[in-house]
Image (cartoon, rainbow, N blue to C red; front, side, top):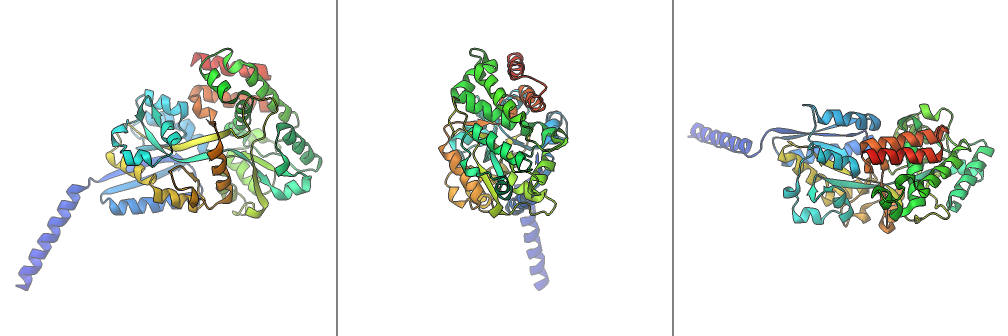
Length: 421
């Protein structure tokens, strides 16, 4: 009887196993994104482990590649048989191009009312193209001047007193006079330089000016505010504010050198907090009590408001042909508990509603507050304007930084690219 009982138990166990295996398909969801600090990778690993535990038969595989390489390889990769199921996206015009090209999956039918209601409206809108949802945001990003407070003291610069572009130029002059490198920048990747040019566009043209240029009104991106932005940038470049060899320096190198204490300022997004520590020689970077942030200065006479922000609304887009489990994992990544965990660990600025209180990092909390009062948030131009025009903007920004193009010619080059897109 005992033997018989064990046999029956074994049969029941086998049946349960078979039923379980038919309830969940064996599938691997491939997620591709730019490189992140190890702390954020650990966060991903925990999410993956928890999701796989509750979804037998589903494996989640994250792959990370360097930021610039990601941008360069993604288009080719999406046309190959090796395309992932979820890709990191900065939304904007590049996302729209991918949707138009048919490489993304319309997940509108899978976005339940409770899911959409949990996400900030601006975030959901960023991943909605012509009424169709192609992905979901996980975080907002804000570009600020990260500041080494010890070097500021050495240079006699009070960062908190910098309110205008003229104030900033004066601080750069002071730093140079004190023998302090004013600004670290990864010029080789070009996109860090476009933060200057792009932010000055926002300050000079404002929300209405940006909309007019994108709408093809008047002289577009060749209009006076965009020329003036180039002149503002030239006024900075003329001071030779960047580290020696800045056009041979990548973002990864620049953020590490800033973490090593080799420059006063680094204009970068919230991700700088983790990368400057990880990429520094010590692996610890600048101690928090020696690190500060200031807003990008206002420009006197510009149409933009000092509270306007520049950065990203970042998330993941779903690739055409991806299995339903990819959408399910995307939903899991954006749920309130995982968003709160990211905020509590200081990994990024979460975008789900009602999780602001979880943000423990004081720098991120400051950025979150700035985003909350911003009336206009401009997405990174190399994403907002589409891949081709975006590349033109970063090229032009690099040319301006090297003094090989005039502000007028720079503005005309962007407008010509926009007209021919």
